Image (cartoon, rainbow, N blue to C red; front, side):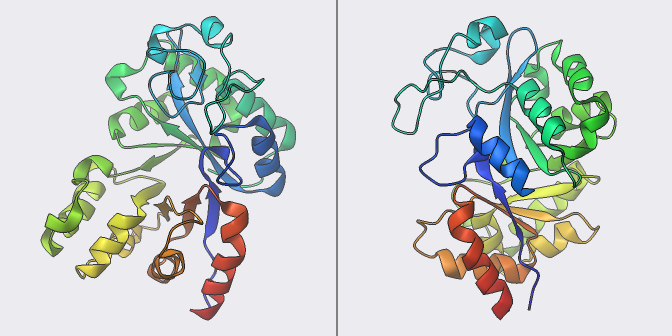
Length: 275
């Protein structure tokens, strides 16, 4: 019997039909002690706001690059639901996330992931200072993750105690059929070269499975120094759900990112108990 991996609430979603970054789901996740993730971009004046895209168009009633708008301007906008209908709430800002985490309390380190979307050169000048002031003594509860390790390293330098996670998304093509065992091993080697001190590695689930099919265990490679592996993103509607979950759990993934944590939880428990 294996210990079941922890499920991480992707973009604070509890169910697949939820809009991203709902305040009620942040409360629910923290009260449940669940791992959760918010995407992070920055306004022109350096405030962190929880949006997946670098532009406002898909997730809010606004338009254009987030970096070209001030916080005051973004606060006048409204979040969009999954069907594109405006909600009553403005976009969620990082200081709200931190205030909620402080009020409810976080019992584990690195439980709340900040998925950093901008690259280092795209961070506004005030972003690092604001983040350091905001997280302060609570920094150990957060992990800044992303594919630009230079940006993550800069954030960790600015914010003592902040954990860092690396995603090798830039290191391989979207079509993995062309990759052989040597190519998969090189992805693992390059990840360790780029981010040797990552607190966690975020691996696309289909990358993990494709590498296993080629005889390469990326979970073992990247986890050899003790860092856990998060496999993303596995949702309830996936046709090969049970088989993929079984392979990820058997490989030793300690965390799985999902938009459907309520639905996946009993299935993950069941599969882990059978391995």
